[in-house]
Length: 130
Image (cartoon, rainbow, N blue to C red):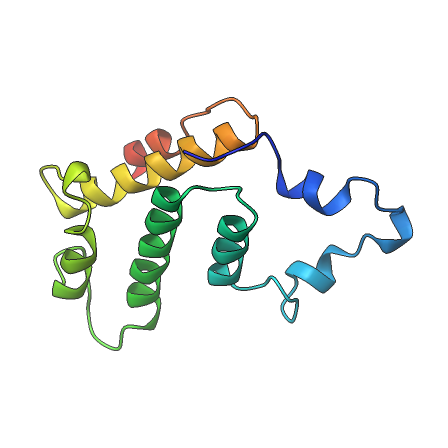
């Protein structure tokens, strides 16, 4: 899980005058917080997510990068992806895709809880589409 009911919007905007709120400078194409890895590291450093969620997020990022930067065909049975997923034996299931979705569901739950938001089951809805 995560710690504390704080959201990125609250963190970025609480007590900040409107003229100082420029999300593009932080999150835009050239912003300081544009990369997923930076956002993951920052959320852990600020105590917004615990170590387990941090590890899950980092694993999802690495899997995403394998898919995004592959020169050849890759799927969830690709050895590098299998190795990453094998680090979560408690997430193990019938298939690598299910293991990945289990990781994503755990992340969604932890992040929505930390943000003080209701769990909406977005990942579960994605399972139907996939």
